[in-house]
Image 1: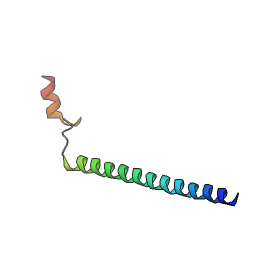
Image 2 (image 1 turned 90 degrees about the vertical axis):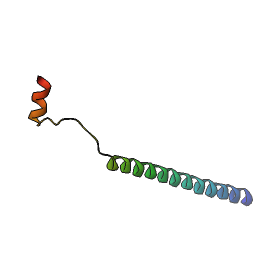
Image 3 (image 1 turned 135 degrees about the vertical axis):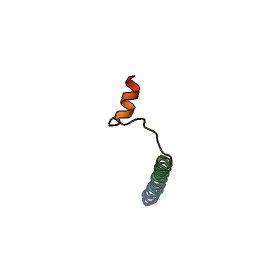
Image 4 (image 1 turned 180 degrees about the vertical axis):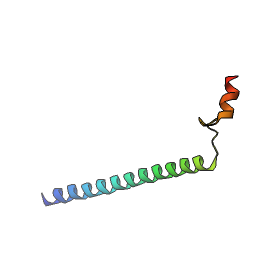
Length: 63
């Protein structure tokens, strides 16, 4: 009986350690992806079109 309990405990510990390693790996993947997106967004200027306060652009588009 003692051998069975020891085996179950050892397997439980191994499963727990494997799960923690997997969760840590997923966290690193998400962090890496987030950093890549942040770098892509900040490195490329985005043309959002005319601003709502630009009267010259508004008058040109209404002609």
